[in-house]
Image 1: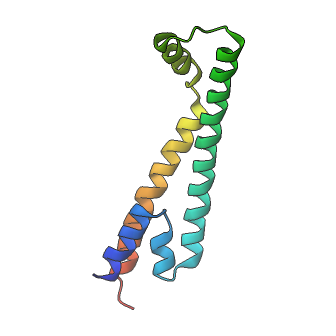
Image 2: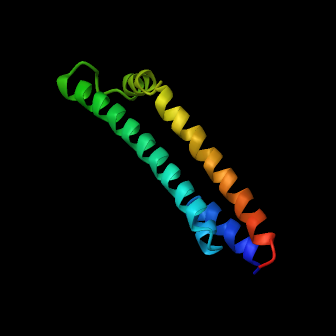
Length: 109
């Protein structure tokens, strides 16, 4: 398998920046990893906050234990722009990491 293919597969299936580390471009790889992990943290944190809101309302009896009511509540609480921005940045990092890893892997040396 070529260096560029291995780097792209690492960036695609492990984490953005992993292919850069494989290609010995440590600074770029660590920057992509840091941004990706920060985005993942923001997404998970937002999801947990929304889950706690739903659980609190279920425990207090404000919402009936009905799948329809619960799905409405989840839809109401999940309209956060911070989480969606982190998702777009993560997708951008993932795509940029794969393209850049392929480009760097094709260079001789």
